[in-house]
Image (cartoon, rainbow, N blue to C red; front, side, top):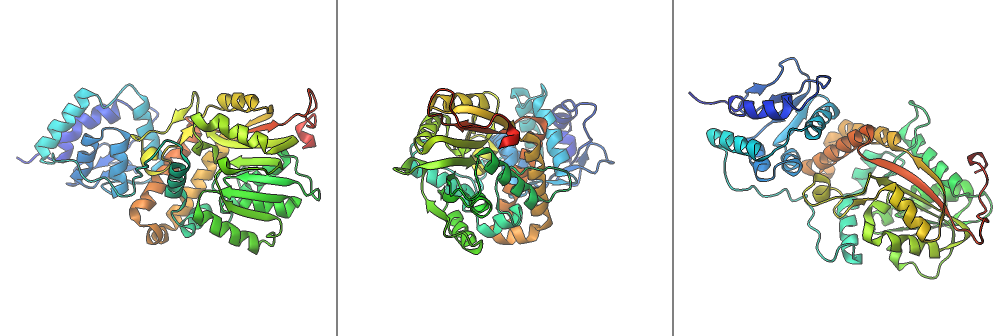
Length: 426
């Protein structure tokens, strides 16, 4: 009698899923390629194994990377609520149940019974494989291009008209994504002490498509230099600056922060860029920015963080497909390095819950325009972004990662920072 996939894999699925989920976790059914199923027939949330090749990928790359490869290729899929299924799988990975030698052996025996063993399958071409010295100018430019030069039309579809690729600030539940991004830009301007009509000079490090620069120039009359390593970002940012009527106050350069020389600024913002710097270069980063500020100048560093820091490795989904060479630095270490560079820390704020909402809005944009997204970048690339943003939303919601704004000021003498005494005076 022929063994179904569910019969062959049932004991393994039971150990990895049923035993790993808490009593409060939602039911997740598994539908397999031969129409057999494992789990509750009543569940609306289904992990779909469309091909035995998914099992082969997981056997050759046990854990996150193998699962991600199968999802990117479409061999593994989800029906129902993607966030619920990711949360369930997160609970499994957080439990004491692991793909150890016993589980891998069981999976191998099941695969043999199903006749799906074979050589490793080719990795999806969307994977990054950066070369060269870690965080060198050339390598950093290559990995930034991998992430940001996907196509401006695709980013507009996902991010919306604000074209802002960082955590928004939702002052209430009903605010639109565009208004929430504007609220974040306004918060940054106030923390930096921008004063309308004063003509202050602002450096926007990792300026993206120019949204923060446009906000500061149009609302506060600031003279802004935005720098980025993405050629596609720079081209669109310049066009958006022209369309906003602030070309006389905003300049966009294709430039690495390490190439800044001889220029002085009243304020600097770095929003969603610090994750690309790396722990080894972080002190140099803050030294460069400190040397570019006038006395009483302020730096606002807005970055994703993790407790004790996380170097995003090549065996992770995000490290291979999304943020190669990325590093999340503990917010305490960020403050210490800023202090060593000569900054006085004046404010630290977490926006973690706001990022969870932001990512859910981006996921909704992608799902609502799925066919268009696939036409723009191909199905595999679209699936990379769907998985990345949904999984990140879960991570910010449960506190696995955070995002902080750290405000530092350059004092010109002990006790003379030029800062107001309360936030209300910003």
